[in-house]
Length: 348
Image (cartoon, rainbow, N blue to C red):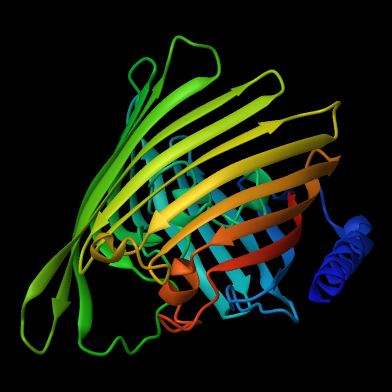
């Protein structure tokens, strides 16, 4: 008897999201000749049929949202100051604060606090309007812990021909971490991302990797956190196809991949599907507490060029992500379960 109620709540969530469409801004705000304010965000609803995940259970939750404001100030013809504030159910935080400078036609350097460039979505994690689904693939989830969100330090971007080569070094910034991190401290970070725009129109290939040190301040010992991702992205005509594989080595070996396909019908509707797999600990890959396979189907409706609504259904086998997020204990979850998500996405 739960399934009709589950579907009804999802339908009500989608209808409620639509109420706020007319209040969403659609263009940047100019402040004088040197400063602009941009932004993006989403308001989502999530409900599960069994395991608790993303703060949701069978009752559902609206605590799945974010609003980000970006302020870009031109300091001179070659230098800009960027800052970004995020607001979500956990509070308000500083996402970016860095200066970049154009050194030549193909070289840009920056210093400050930046999003960490990893995979297709690492530096646009919360910009759902620039993505295709309401819930990110498993390799990007906080529960999987395969990537860090931000770093403080310096970076360089070099764009020779069809390549974009990015390098960075500094220290990881865990934006969701409390001020008191106990006996753990993030140390040096080094990494890079290479993107190749292939001769095939619409196809780009990408490789990302980084290594960071995590110090136990009591023992003085440092462990290396290593993560890498291989990505392919094809966007042409009405097709949007993405595939990524990622691997992390730290206290346990984590691996995951997904393939996602979307096709725009007309100018408004984009149905899409994704197969997602992740194993949180390869040594326990046969235990449903540590792996998760998900078949995702959804549809995106574009209200305007900067506003869209999405509905999607996840059919899950295994509950590795709820265990990874500490919302379900190992061995205590439901192996087969569903998740419904709806979101209103916007940018300006």
